[in-house]
Amino acid sequence: MTFRDRYGPWALVTGASAGIGTEFARQLSEMGLNLVLVARRRQRMEDLARELENRHKIQLRIVTADLSQPDFLPLILSATESIDVGLLINNAGFGVASRFLEHDLEKELALLDVNCRAPVILSHVFGRQMAQRKRGGIIFVSSVSAYIATPFEASYAASKVYELFLAESLGYELKKDGVDVLALCPGSTDTEFHEIAGSSAVAAMSVQPVVELGLKKLGKKPVAIPGWHNRLLVYALKLTPRRMQTLLAGRVMGNLVTR
Ligand SMILES: NC(=O)c1ccc[n+]([C@@H]2O[C@H](COP(=O)([O-])OP(=O)(O)OC[C@H]3O[C@@H](n4cnc5c(N)ncnc54)[C@H](OP(=O)(O)O)[C@@H]3O)[C@@H](O)[C@H]2O)c1
Image (cartoon, rainbow, N blue to C red):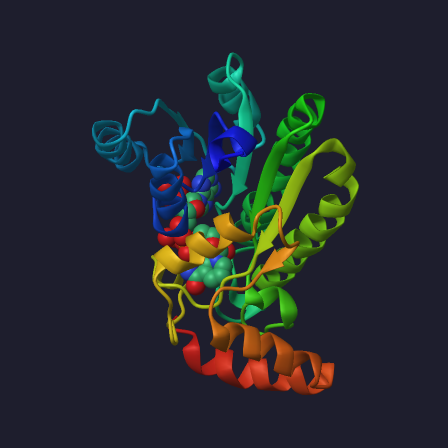
């Protein structure tokens, strides 16, 4: 069975206007999946859709939606009511890096909405549809941050733990429904993420191998960590006392915060 037969004919990618989400759209289009692109910046998604439509024989739909807002779901439902979404990529997300008490509270809460609430809603809605069809896949783009409490990026790291645990647990629950679930946990990746968060990137990987690994491991493993250095880091963390982990993370992040 091809990837398209297993997870097609449509994939929905949140955060498709940049970085890892754009790369998911590119690689999925190469495998012949039709795409629903979701993000706030419509022009970027239109440019991407034009490029992919010209290159591959696929259909694209664009949903301009702010996933931090309570009313995003009807927008996505109306764009997907007549199609079978066989693959959901919960990718949209952002971080806020600096001292917690200096953060804007509204932004902290928006982070929870985008990184946690939206993936729950979308996984529930599309997970049910996939379970009825007895096939499908859901990828949560978590992070290596899910493995370490991170001072100066406290809510972000906590939100990524949420996604990692949700993905691992749903992977177990949905197996009998024929739905594969993967937590993709990238380390530092070369996207707009760091600039938006207000931090510096260290040893950033390019988006291509990150996404390749996610698509390769879906259905084979519950968790995928791109890059040997990130896998080594996660392994080393498991051997390090938690208090020590937090001390180290605080030292490192304290130097990476740019605002
Ligand atoms: N880059 C890294 O080092 C790294 C490492 C580990 C994990 N990750 C995770 O990878 C995922 C993708 O991030 P990235 O690195 O590709 O960052 P990015 O280049 O900044 O892209 C983030 C994407 O999320 C979308 N997004 C953000 N807020 C949104 C909102 N309120 N509503 C709808 N869409 C929203 C953005 O679209 P609009 O702005 O157009 O809405 C954009 O398409 C995130 O979940 C991030 O936590 C990144």
